[in-house]
Image (cartoon, rainbow, N blue to C red; front, side, top):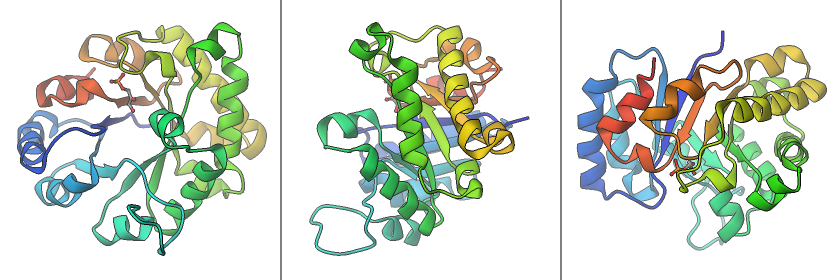
Length: 249
Ligand code: 13P
């Protein structure tokens, strides 16, 4: 049985004092869950969040990193830097980064490799646009993104990669994929992984759903056979709401 992993993606929200208060509020609300709880916070919140989350079951992640270890890349943060303060997870290839910051399948692949070099666990986002969905290209797009993202990784690394299937049309729009559609897309991603890396690897990869997840739809989504939890944007900004998603059962 795969575990359920519920991750919040705060995006460009929350000041350090708000992050500290959020984690203090969330801690008692999720302390008894058997699900894995992750908060992916802005760089400026990382250190405060890590300190506040010490001795809790809340894990901390970043939202992006560079694929080089160091160098003349003004404004960038490396995997080595994240590791140095004990960050555990990092989101790679979020659709907002692909859309606004020129993230490509190639840079996503390089970043995943660099994340593993630094013992960070990547949460890799894939997903189709509304146009692609309407053209019937969902499966083609998401399996290709998955294949290119994972290219050259070892079986062990693939097993330790979390994939988040986030249909772009469902992000921040209040529109959620139906649980059947989300489950089918995730099955296709898993089949692609099985085709390349074998059944054993495919069965152990955590694949989340993301896109307007909230407490009122989390249970229906997360109880599907292939959906192993969620990557949550807007609804991860309120501790009580987020705790209900974590404790969806
Ligand atoms: P929303 O939950 O706000 O739709 O955002 C989803 C997302 O992009 C998480 O990474």
